[in-house]
Length: 502
Image (cartoon, rainbow, N blue to C red; front, top):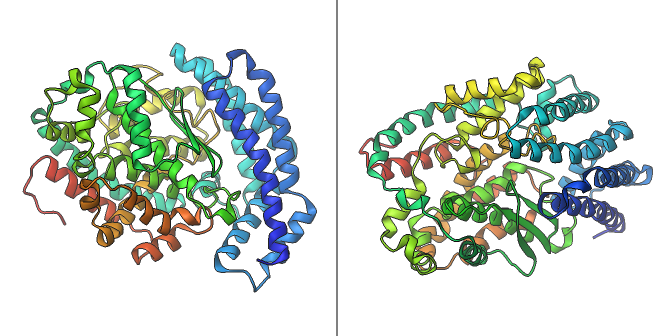
């Protein structure tokens, strides 16, 4: 590794130190911080944000990155990292420092307002700060718009490079076309699937113990991770040896808590799997969809499979003998995979999940392409839920207030969940060809799955593009046809139809 690149990594480490402090404050706000801390903590976050801005736009750092852009001695991965860093510097440089700091302060206040509004089920409590956040994100996107693109494309690119509205409209069009008929099939077959036991009361103390076990079972190193509690489950990585996940425990919703833990463990395993040399390079710097592919694969393709539960279900029954003593493994698997129209994204089944993402995608397009008024968003949200999923939204808590993302200013993020599903299916099929996933899971060897993903995905962290990782691992670039095929095979088998899978 040459001297200039070493200097670059040292600067990245300095940035990572400030970002870790920022992330730690954010983690604390969501988990343990007192409610009265919001105002002053927001001020501290504004200061930290200003320091990050100064480091990111430091003239010597920018000059170093420009030199490295022309360095022929760099490896392909190093060149990709420098390219992405130059883009990040350019985008940061385009924002006035006061706007950069303002976003950090506003985010902290907005998160607190969202929590209160959701608790009280009153959108009006969140509306002023949401309106301010929308206008601020528009202003920032205008500053970063280098080539006259639609503002929403500018925001999308920050989470998923190369995925424009044009590309996403085609992707979501395909998903909607294929999913709606399958949902109809599910609704007709759901009466044959027993689910009564999922609503029984499972003691939270026992859930915590079992969830910790299952997080370790799938591969999470709890010497380098912790499991906390929050209103909205999430993962925060301070660095590869300090990753924090949360879940939300509810006695009568054991499956949601369990699969939420597996989901966040997938994120955390990805964070823990970086190449040690690039420990302070953010894993999400290339694609949030790649990050989501790991959580969605662990949660659904692995975690909801019969093979996964074959060695684990007896342990689950021993942990909850009164609640599951009359439930067979087959009944458990069919229940946790049952597809139905629901209100809450994080509780949605695997089949309808992307329709929830489509609602948010359409809402965000309206906000940024048509200046849709923030005060009317609950109405728009309800209309789209009725159109896409066929359910009525009864209140704000189960509607526009259900997600934390808008409070955090994360407009453009939601499509990454759907993209992640498609990436996961493509990777899973390639992995299955090489290690026979069902076999190793039935044998109780999930470490084989983790090892394959580590070698093909995790070790590269934020170094490689989605298409390069997919080409190397699967032989082709991103292609959602694998996801459609996966859904058809799984749900036609679940609902016992003989219709051919194309």
